[in-house]
Image 1 (tube, rainbow, N blue to C red):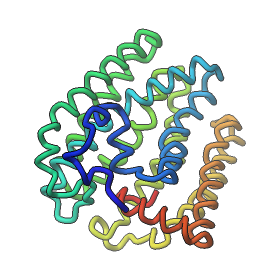
Image 2: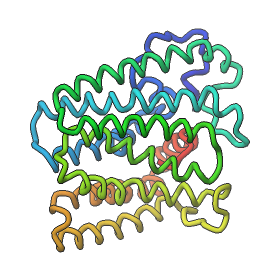
Image 3: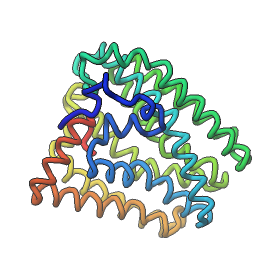
Length: 286
């Protein structure tokens, strides 16, 4: 797969200062991966905001602002990792061709500064519109920045913990600003069971972290089994009154998505090749 950053000297650098542009250029480089991004990274928080709050168009617009604002901060970690941290890793996932590292280094501070400024402005807008949970919102944003700093500077088993915290905050930050206090624990439990736990299991099963834990040799089959279990647990949680029935929809959506992924990977070879290359490029098995 051709890296969109290969001709760095010919790039229109202006577009790379836009939120999410770096993410799409280095991680989600084809339409199938972009669809995966919206289904896996964006849809869950939007679903929970609607499920635990009100279904209004205005809320959807504000959620989008919150999501982009969160990614302004999140991309700071991406950029620093791909320009600086990978140079000191033993087996890095290379998303930028090595000859262009120093060219991109010239833009490093500006790329991060612009995102921090946009993130602060977006956060100010959100906290002025939804002041109830602004303290928790600020705490989550600061925790994300600190966690990403630790994740990028220290390599080892601690990254399993920092990864889990990062992923949790990626989904919770666009939620906490909108959801009433009494529903935050519920939303957190959905995020942990539906997204974070499976990512954590897959992460620690990597050979370099815990050699004895190898549960994801066939990642697609593993995910199907995982989501069947989580769907069963979610039904129990609804039955005992901890979750409302609408919250079961998210695990079931992920189960359907993973079943389709398994089918495509095993029966639609030309699309499977695209997905495989995208997973390899992303450094995960999304």
